[in-house]
Length: 213
Image 1 (cartoon, helix red, strand yellow):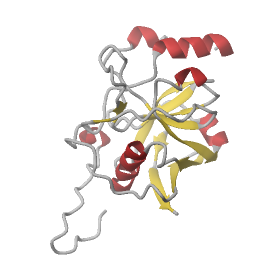
Image 2: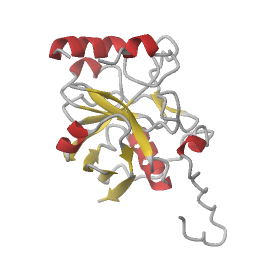
Image 3: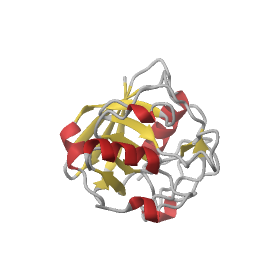
């Protein structure tokens, strides 16, 4: 078993080691040319590590909170299809949709896997400490059901407002209600939970596609 607590830095974006310990004990365990006068979409660095801190602030609101958004996370093991809840977490969904459409998540890895708890990815550095260069305000409303998708964050000691990581997300492998008051969940898996359960450390996010309905 990985002794994750001993290697954790307070600067790493992830779920509380205390919360993880509680659960583990419980379960025994290329862009088209821009039109004139339209800002060009920035080129996404080929090397994922070069995407760290590439933005200075969260994106402006560009989704319609009255519409439904589906994210398809493609991996070599299959697709994970996630229903995003823009009404409950508009800033978080807007940010996730923006990064996915920019190609920020392409070829990033799942850097953390805790059996019976979570899989976590979205860090361009693959270390657990990287992000796009900004945080997202907390929107703590939705419960952590099995298959919930939520944002990682730094601990309360250095992050009293519980602001979310700009890009690191996790998906729960089981209901984790003890996380409900501390982390921003923004949707849930509707297809491919078997894929979620099969993810291992180092597995690659080939791309994340967004469908608007």
